[in-house]
Amino acid sequence: MDSHSIWLFVHIVLLVYWLGADVGLYAVMILVKNPKLSYETRKTLIMMAFYIDQFPRVTFALMLPVGLQLAQDLNLFPISNSLLVFAWVIGIVWSLMHLAIVRFKGTPLASRLLQINKAYELLMGGLFIAVGGWSLLNDSPIAAGWFAMKLFLFGLIFWIILGIDTVFQPFTTILRMGEHGSTPAKEAEVTRQTHLTMAWAVLLYLVVLTVAFMGKVKPFW
Image (cartoon, rainbow, N blue to C red; front, side, top):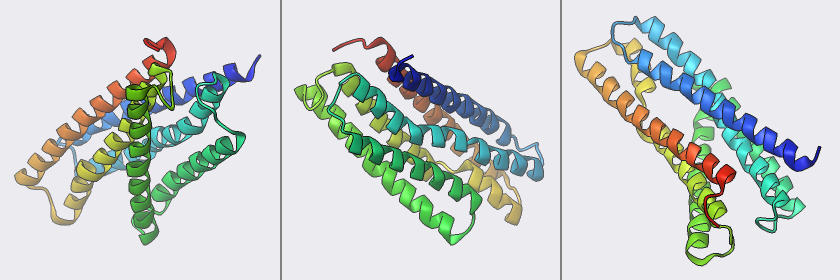
C-alpha cells in the first residue's frame, strides 16, 4: 500500500462528508422556510444546521493540505515539504476556527473570527483563481490543463461560500423573529433569501462535482 492511495482515500472521504452534510443543510433550508412551523421548531432546526455546517467547512479546510499531498505525489507542481507543513497548519487552524465560531457564537470573539474567515476566503479564492486562470492561459506555472482548471474552480468555491455567508442570511432573519414576531413581510423575505441561498448551494454542489470530475477523469491536459 503506497502513500498516494492512502491520501486518495482520505480525499474521497472528505468529499463524501462535504457533500453529504451539505445535502442535510439543503433539507433544513426546505423545512425551515415553512411559516406553519412554530418558532421553537424552526430555531431547533437552525441550531442543528449550525452544527451540521461544520462538516463541510472542516472538510473543505482539510482539502487544501490533502490536495497538495496528492499534487506532490503526482509531480504536478514543485511542492516542498515546508509548503506541505504550512498547508497542514493552515488547514488545521482554519478547521479549529470554524469550530470556535460555533462554540463562542454570539460573542465578540466569534464576530472577530467571522471577519477573519471572510478575509481568508476572499484572499485564498483570489489566489487559486489567479494561479489556475493564468496557468490555463499560459501553461505555466502549471502545465496540466485539468489541474489548472481544478485550481481555478477550487478558488470559485471560496468565493461562492463567501457570498452565501455574507449576502444570504435566512437563518439570521428567522432567529430575529423570536424577538419581534413574524409578519407576512418577514416571511416573504425569509422565503426570498432561502431560495437565493438554495440556488447558490446548487451552484456550489455543481462546482464541487466538477472539481472532483477534473481530478478523477482528467479530461484534458
